[in-house]
Length: 281
Image (spheres, one colour):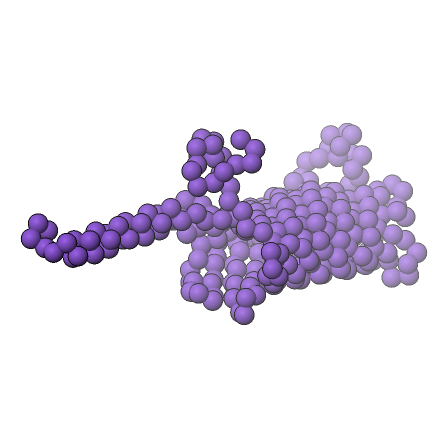
């Protein structure tokens, strides 16, 4: 370097400086969290032979929060998806002479690994856990008007996404394969279970033999100026068959909401970061 002309020394120094800045920028890439809150409305079909042999159908609506965030696992490639949903349904029997009401709170969490990814298409797979608590209430019944619905399952999930002309299309399917759910025996009253303490056998082991469920989720993200509109279709199918009691809950919903990207920081990193200024701390 001592014998080189000054112009070459300056050029080399600038080149090394640019390379170091580029490497620093690559190392300091911040991965954002994608989250959306959507409102859904559609039709639900309710069958619970503990309450009635008939199928009830009617309006259903839900509030869904969908969140996909990065993790540090598997070379920072594994994504964590969380979904929190509140769903209500108001249904009537075929002759519209009786009503049923359905309500449920559910939480799903899945780890998704990108098995294939390029600029336009990606395919991810993995699994996780889901938990739900809800029930069906039949207005006509007097002795046993309600049926508790609660379960915890291990799930398998697959997701594919495609970017086309600025829009992002996503299709995801999720199904449980092992778990537990609550179900009384045929003719066993809830008074007997909860008041008299005779609840033996009401917690059932779940597998494909007695529980079938599938969540089919399709969305389209459309960017408009500073907003990203997310719209799509959500189909939930749930069926259990145990102790001569068949339960089937099916819903088809049109979903619409807003999707945003966010950066999440906490602890000392949030207070001492030179790149991000908090409006609160």
